[in-house]
Length: 115
Image (cartoon, rainbow, N blue to C red):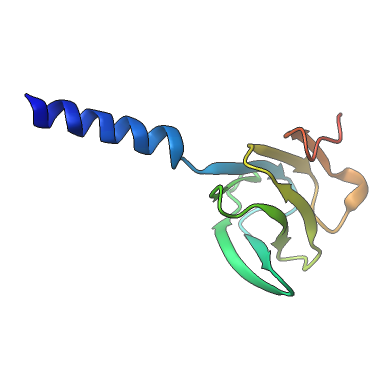
């Protein structure tokens, strides 16, 4: 019985404190293209997450609380979109990262651009 309680508590601890945050979105002109999230460690960059944008333009990338600070999204159009990684979920919608005038960040206080 005690082992079961300890196991349940460890699972709850893991879910509460080590759960990753996400960047989700829809980029309608980048269907079936790769997208990645990179972070900065001083002047060098490191990969955080990567995925492929699906046939509806949707994607999801995850990052950990340790990936705090500035990061950027990069897709097949090779145009970065800088984001603040502050431990919150972020949502991005638009045509492509290369057409900045179409990009709206609809979720995430640090990055919010409204509709």
